[in-house]
Image 1: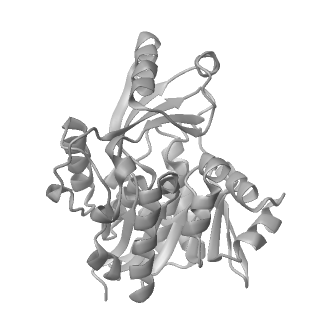
Image 2: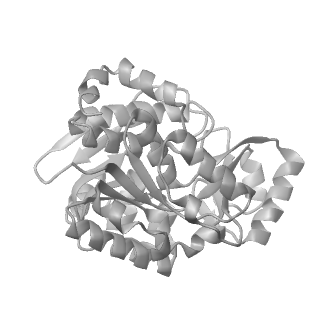
Amino acid sequence: MKSYDVIGVGNALVDQEFKVTDEFLVRHNIEKSIMTLLDEAQQQLLLGELHKEFELEKRAGGGSAANSLVAFSQFGGKAFYCCKVANDDDGNFYQADLDRAGVSTHLVKQNNNGHTGKCVVMVTPDAERTMCTFLGITIDFSTEELEPEVVADSQYLYIEGYLATSEIARKAVQEARAVAEANGTRIALTFSDSSMVKYFKEGLDEFLTPGVDVLFCNKEEAELYTGKEGLEPALQALLQVARQVVITRGKDGAIIGTRERRIQVPGFKVTAIDTNGAGDMFAGAYLFGITQGLTPAQAGTLASRSAAEVVSNYGPRLSTERQQELLLELGLTEHVASTL
């Protein structure tokens, strides 16, 4: 038995979320529904403009893989996160946030000068999220932040696609992959955002070589990455580099594919007000399910229901209490209790 269920590698970002208008995005030439990288000065200018018109809705710990691991931990899994923060107020906030969620880290060992990364999340009335990110010190995520012994002692290594933007981060991912492969740790990857597929496909190619056990993406990302039009052609192409592919489809649920079969995961009808974190929650809930004895269909249903709950609230996370209620609602509590 390994000590951890999942170890994740990814960016550490403190989210600042605003409810904005489409007109604001157009006026400031911000591409809607994707993540755009900014430098610190650009982000500060943007924040200045936002504060003139809108109230700050929420400040919270963020980062794609971190959101997934928080969800994973709050369901009851044992998670560890490798990331990088600065010795500043945001860094202290971020560490405390992960501690409260039960995600293990070695952040207490870090004493880095610089600025912790921040993500400005803008949510329009159609519930779409648009992000402008200053990576700060997390742009220097490297092998120094890896914990190889924890990688070896985990069931899964979970890789965040956003790390494809940095050469030193890509090297760290390759080292983590090598440790995982040598110690029987399975590998999962999320594309994270369509912007990663559009602008950093070569980095994602590195992450997928020589293959992964589980790949998470949405339909748009799947088609962009493969150059195939349509869900099934894209899925077939992705199965050349992944043993299992999970493609999310928003309100229509998801499809889980292997070379042998397809599993249709139902969607859940909710009133969506904020799509920020939906894919992260889906991945975290799904990984929890498959590491705790649920079938892929059961894990997919839990993931779909949890993602639907996230989009019906502001922010990328749910409370521990609400996540436990979802397990009970779906009749899955007894299925996972024997493994926890």
